[in-house]
Image (cartoon, rainbow, N blue to C red; front, side, top):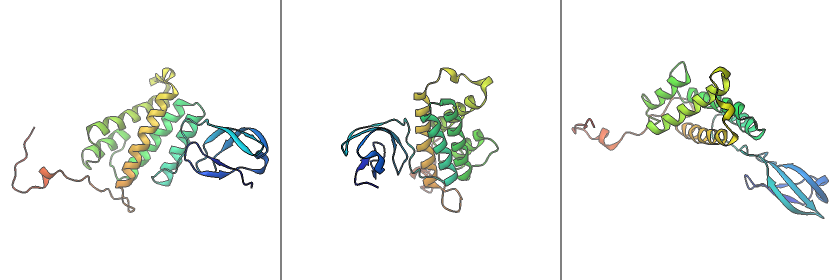
Length: 199
């Protein structure tokens, strides 16, 4: 390896560049940490330019390893320009995360409702976001239902971005034994002797 180091435009890690890229080089380079793809130009041992090419760089996800592999695949599909494939893999990651969190149900729809109702992890807005991810992935997987031909990479990016946040939040609430941690109760529910208003 050379003394020339390149700072990733995605994760900000400094990685050594291969010896073959240190004198005069223009072409692709991948970060050694997050594997984000860049277009770099090196002239006489100095990095002249570096442009991040990946739309959604893969990161060290804060979730179970199998779910992280699903998110990696969703990001790889998005970076390759395959919006439908990314939507399907994003849905797969969400379903795996729901199952790993202890949610009950045969379908992803039932698991999302369980996370909202029984476990109280999802409020109404989060439930709608998770349901949107589920429906978007369903459309990608079932062409007869699909209107995804008109959906671009921007929508797939937002879907993956929202799913990553949901999945990482779910993972932070799931203890190592997989038993779900109920959402904290509101002060109104914990005060003994006070009636709850029905509004």
